[in-house]
Length: 439
Image 1 (spheres, rainbow, N blue to C red):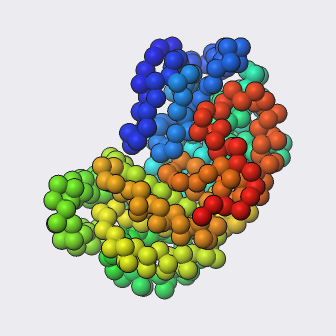
Image 2: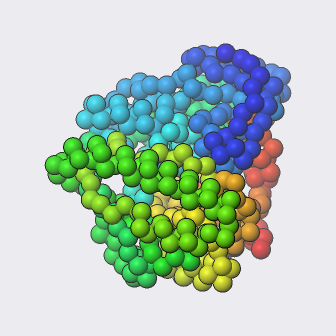
């Protein structure tokens, strides 16, 4: 399928009109498309589900979706591992794995991404003993910049390709580690913010998955812990309770509060005081394929930084003080999550355990001043932005943040020497040299 379209990402903060949009039906079609782009000197960008806020896929030349290249190729039960096609949505993969008695070891709070997109941008969940999805990759099959089908298994190249932003090739299949299927006990609570900060280290250490949310200038936090359990007794009741939280509270009420605040700014403080009253406080028991993700229907802007976990207390204290001084009032929370270190060249958690700190605003609300304030604090603590989230960094900033920056580019050059996969955004980012960061 080849046609002209107008592509727009999920949040509608960028769009493009590629000269050619294609949804190949098989790997052979992908090879032919890449060779066409190579022969004509055209830029080619892969696109997944469009959940990135940064213009990673933006192009006016060739845009390729792997939407028709989906499904599981095989499960290796002895490892265990699954080989899955790049266009497969995470929620489809999760359901299939559950039917076979397996699961992914961890997942983020959105499961609509494609496997290739999630791997390429180091999509993560939370849990200090658990890595991002890219760290679970055992093998990648991609079509390189000259149209060659390439299987990557050796560790040095895999360390570059696993988080490569679609810049090393079109990822047509991925082999991922999996685990036996499991259930989680999920505890959601509303606590005082000071208590959440005081108990932070203990909660991170004692729970398989821990995260918390906090609205600037509110003295409350919303904590969520998840731990392995054999208890499934409450599963029947959850058929009612979980949808109420997912659809009514985290989407319906959130949208109403933000729309009301946008139209009547003077009511914002009163609206903020409603949030602790409607936030869920519950214990539930959920299977792996349903425990992590929540529907996200309310469009919003997001910035997210990974900092060394040893700096999390200082960073949150400074962020809290700064936002209080600025009088920041937003009806979206700051979210704090945790992730195990890995050895991938462009992973935000490369060579250090990290805390991810993210800030959000309603899609129709100005965000630059707020996000720049957050970013300046994260930069002081050596923060690395999530590749799919908003930021204000230069190429030199990125080069300085990643010690293996040059190693990544050496591997990338071997697979795409002419830069077929580089759009203007990536060319700007990748032009960075290892110098002290700006600002």
